Length: 190
Image (cartoon, rainbow, N blue to C red; front, side, top):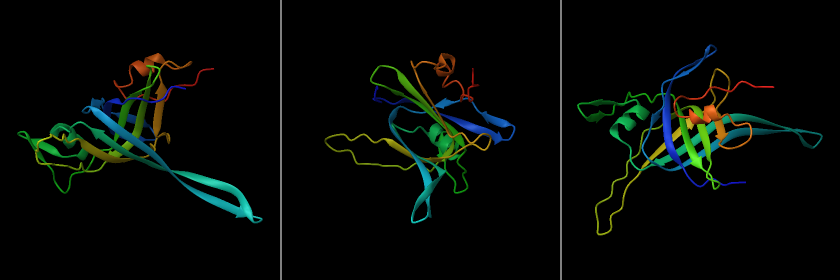
């Protein structure tokens, strides 16, 4: 089985609505160049005991912790992710800024040359942290790190879509348009 060996094309799409009528996203926007991403699903589990042993285990999905590192974070990307504004080229961050709810997509190259495509469907990022370092004899480039929390959609309970390129049954139309819009759940075919 091929292993993941790359990461690229990080995109975000603002979630405009998520209710019993459906889900609507804005057109995805590509962020800066990807360095790494850590996606950590979380679940709460509870053991149910009877007759001095575990009878059942109940598990509830809690959400996904996301950590992403990009080569830089432009003022426009930072404003988008934090709900800040830019006026005459100056990023203005305010205590009342509200980070938008959005989807996060990317692709990861596999050792067989094909890609795995991922969309996390609903979440928010925290305020971006900044690292600055004085210039020395040996330059040390700084990168931008983002942390976020993602969770399931209200409409259908889905929280993530994953597609592998080149496997039997994969819908090439969906994969080819992966970053043009957040994909909808495919219809089952008999």
